[in-house]
Image (cartoon, rainbow, N blue to C red; front, side, top):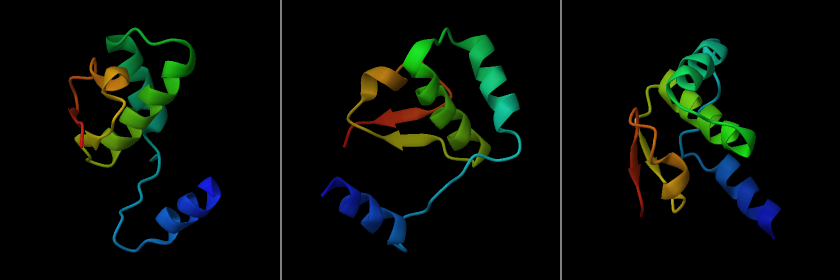
Amino acid sequence: EAMEEVRKYLQARNILKIYPGEDIVEKIAELSRRHSVSGPRIFDLKLVATMLSNGVRRLYTYNEEHFKDFEEIEVVVP
């Protein structure tokens, strides 16, 4: 059931998909210097780095707590 939902999102033409760019390692290093991140939170940092390398500055999520320290982006709870 969950995989079916993922498939729908991947095939949706009205949802922009972004991917890590060539500068992702530099973005992660830059963010790591500014934010104290360890353990599984590195995945949040990678998401923020991917967003920034694609010019995305706003994240809609119910997981506001994980992203509140990243002043580089705006976090919106839908």
